[in-house]
Length: 145
Image: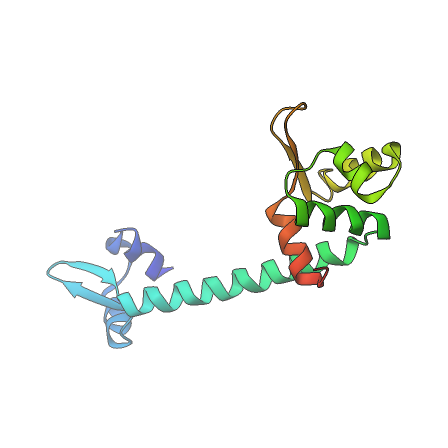
């Protein structure tokens, strides 16, 4: 808590003994009447926070990827979008010879909030589907391409 007080400019909340101890440990630096956190300490704290965030994100991604099981047709559609960029549903129908109703259902599932692997961009007339960043990450992490 003492480091928190110092970091936020409330040195008056920290007793002298604690200030001396923190200085001896190299965690804070005194500049005139002011105290500040040592840059090395800040860098260490940021690296530790980054490692913790990476571990948390890794666990979250593992859980997300565990839940996503794609059908063969869904994989075909994703692969088609990946290789052809910005394709509409009718392009997928003709390119993969999958019935139109199935394609609409598949792109609806792949673009759902739950999966979010593809997204429609542009107008209904001239736009098309593309992979989202989550879709690209999912493909990379699961070796689909």
